[in-house]
Image 1 (cartoon, rainbow, N blue to C red):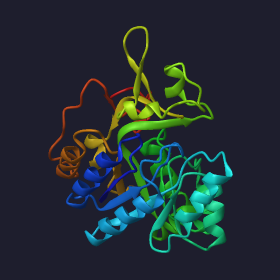
Image 2 (image 1 turned 60 degrees about the horizontal axis):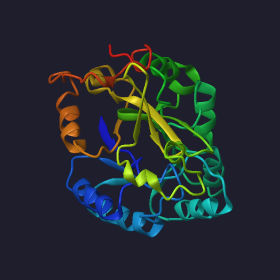
Image 3 (image 1 turned 180 degrees about the horizontal axis):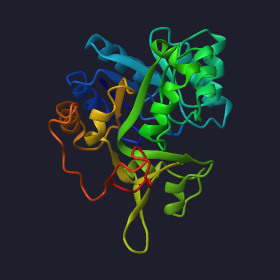
Image 4 (image 1 turned 90 degrees about the horizontal axis):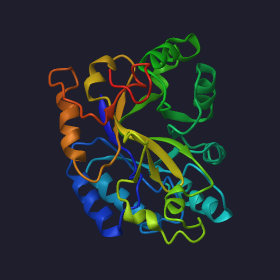
Length: 290
């Protein structure tokens, strides 16, 4: 089992990003995803910056993958996507079916991100025929569902041709919108947002009237209010999951990687906080902890 570090989902200042990836280079992560996946207005780091970081991480022995955005709305964003696809060195994670089409035109292998609606064996088989070499299971699905899909005959006979990755730690990316909810929360329009999401390095919490963490606002992205944490489910993944993904956090990312690696076989179970959940994996309500 390998461990991957997903793209930073939040808007962090450039210096903070560069320092974070210096630490990543010295970490025990096997696979690193780089790129802006949420909002094209976040330009602290541009493609050339991500590409330079990718080269540095590759030299440090990491497998690097460049992540595309999840929602494309303008021609300029497609031109930026073309830079990712034409990078010439690194695998691309497609988080939008348009990106998959462009990668297929170039006969390039790709990773299908969790935002791609792959909910049955026929869709997965089709994506494999288009060049998929790795897929990230949609975050709201269960371990039981994954086992059933991979056991289907149309998948089982080509199981060696692709890897399966599971989002296992961090606030779950649930939905994207043409509206910017962080800007709206400050009574700003999307066009006049003044990049206010940089003031919320872990997103902006949304609580219910009884104080429950329901959602996290992250620009146009809505995340789960509870942090998803499958650290105690790793020993159930041996037959289905090749790669476990952790999403970057403002603090504690590398400490949690150590906890995950120590508990691969269930030898070092962790006490979850009251705002951690694992319900989706266990086929329960998403906010539940089993």
